[in-house]
Image 1 (tube, rainbow, N blue to C red):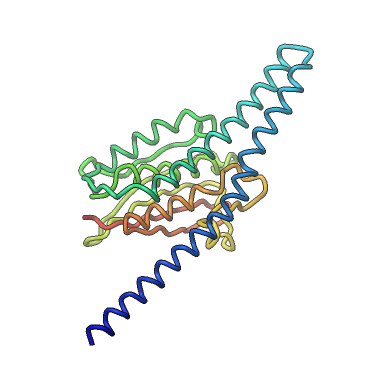
Image 2 (spheres, rainbow, N blue to C red):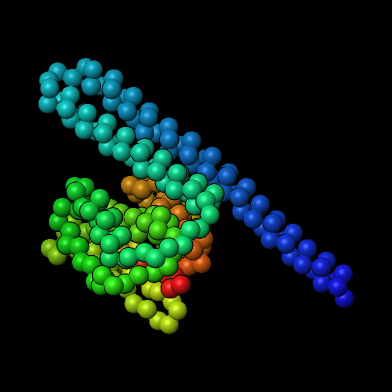
Length: 245
């Protein structure tokens, strides 16, 4: 009986290891293909803009090309940041500590609110100063930074009262954190795909396609999960679920 139990345990470990290896190989294939494009495309664009700028006939024209170069470089910088976050999440151990939710959310918003897209957005924080959760501070920061960045990036310019609201509630031992916006929204047929690696809903999507994938993988490390509610033209709500302790 003991030998059978040990063999069964070893078989289960082997299956889990094989599943992890299969997932890692699949992600590596997608990563190499997408990264080669997403790293080279902005660089090629900047090189082309440099050649054009060198032939500019006025300072205003040259400044216009410089602004376009800045946009391409920012795109490249965001992509490298996403890769770094993904790598750290896979390698580093989870370090749990008492995290003040209102404090960390405010810090993140302060770092994002000066980007041009956030100028007309009303940020609403419905979290009391006494709300704490035991989790990994750096990983929670990655999750919230990605969710707030997405809410800013895909807000609806046509709406008068653009807002992003962050709130929470506790149900027993489970902690719920919600990020709501009244932005562009996400079509229902994309709901199951937005958390895939390098998934972009449209060719003109501004992100790297890694943000929500990193959010999902990071929350798995924290024994958490995420749910999406959204409709085109109405807005989006992401609900993060975490163990309170």
